[in-house]
Length: 238
Image 1 (cartoon, helix red, strand yellow):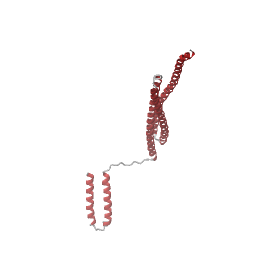
Image 2 (cartoon, helix red, strand yellow):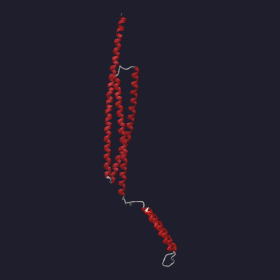
Image 3 (cartoon, one colour):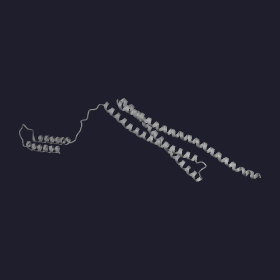
């Protein structure tokens, strides 16, 4: 408000000055037309100045090409780091979901093997439907992991190039930070993938157990059939 009041006072003063100067006709003074143009320019200048007084601004510093390149390299490393962090999070989460699905499938298969010979045909069919559905879920999660892993690998390559560009441009701090982020992302992904590999190893062991248990169960069924057929053979001989 104080700025607006000062602007109004300036305009009032200039208008009164213009009226006074327009009445002067001495040779020592410029013509009225020149004074009018001068006053109009002055009023416009003051009007702009009054408006700018209310808007804070800073003077733009002079930047060299080297400093501009360093700033651009830092921006590249920042955006690359964001891309890497997002893909790392997506891959870790997908890998964790895959590991969880594998462990669930292992539990279902062990439960089925422990129930062999104790289930009715309907119950056996029901649990097999659940196992088949879980196997499909495991496959879907595995495909999702592979898709995110490809994107994450591209992000790592991009970050490595950004770190190299930052180093050659003189932005050493941005380069070091970028390489630190790469190592951290790689260690986190390796840890998640190790858990997934452990789950797959247990899944393989369960598969071997399933084959052995099913073989034993089939052999026991054949043995029972032979025992039941013996009396019938003796009856036929009699």
